[in-house]
Length: 343
Image 1 (cartoon, rainbow, N blue to C red):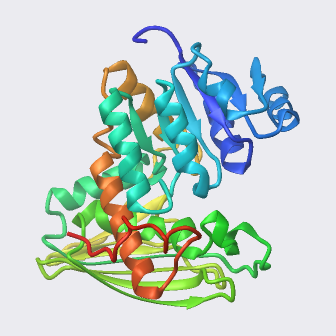
Image 2: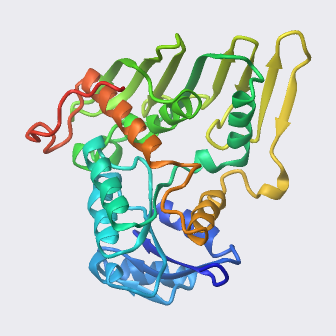
Image 3: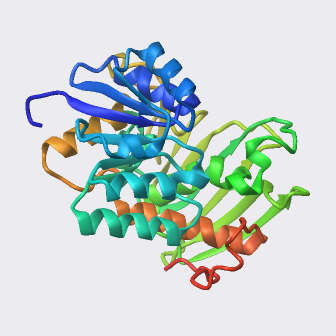
C-alpha cells in the first residue's frame, strides 16, 4: 500500500457520504472502488454520480469485497455499531463517522474487535485533523496561554425540526447532543482530556430526545469547560480557551476555523489564518489523508484521533445523557449499561 492508491469502499449514500466521497475523488492517492446502500438503486445512483465501478444493494456484499483497503461508514449513527462491526469482522479497515456509536459500550466493542483483529479503526472526527485546530492545540500544548482554566464551545442549529425528523427520532439516536454536542465535548477533551465530573441540564422533546443541552465539565486541576448544543436555536459555533497567561478565541466555526486570535497577557493580539493551500474550509481531505498515512505506515490507530480518546468522549456523552435522562430504545434493558461517571 506504500505506492499504490488506497482503495476506499463507501457504506451509505447520504449527505456525509457524498461530501466525503467528493473530496476523496479529488485526491490523487485515493480511489473509490465500491459503494453500498440498503437500496441498490441508491447505490447505483451514487456510483454513477462519482464514477464508482461497483455498487451494492446490501452491506454484506461490500463486506465480502476483498478488492478494497478501507471502508468509510456514514450510516445514521444508530447503525454505526452494526455497520462498522460487520466491516471489521470481514477484515476491513474502517473510518466511522461521528458520533462513533450510541454509547460507550458499543464503542468499546468496536475498539476491541479492531484491536483483536489487527485492523485500523478511527472515528471521523475531522475537527481533530483540521490544520487550524492542530495549530491551536500545539499552541496550547506549548504553553502559549499558560495552564488551561476554562474552555467554552457551542454548536446549535435554528430548526425547527419536525417530530418525524431523524434529529428527533429516538430510534435513530436523535437529539442535539450526539449529533452536534459531540463537537464541543470533543474540543474540550482535545485540550484537557477526560473530565473528572459532569453536570448537565437539557430541554427534552415529547419523544424523549434533547432539544438543547448544556453541560459543565470539570477536571481535578480545577479547569472547567462549558459546552452547549441545540436543535432549537442557531448559535455562533464559537469557542474560547482561557489560560493562566492568555486566551485563544475562535470567533465562529470552531470545528473548521478560518482563523483564531491569540491574546497573550501584556502583548498585542495575534491572528492566525488558514493557509489557502490547505483547501476549502469544510474539506474532509485532512481526515482522509490521516487515514491513508496511517495505513501506509502500518498503523492500526491514529495518534491524531486516538481510539482511547474516542472512548473517553463517549463516556462523557453517556454521562451527560445519564444526567439529563435521555435513553435510546434497548438501553434501559441493557444489563451492561450503568450510570456512567468519567474517570
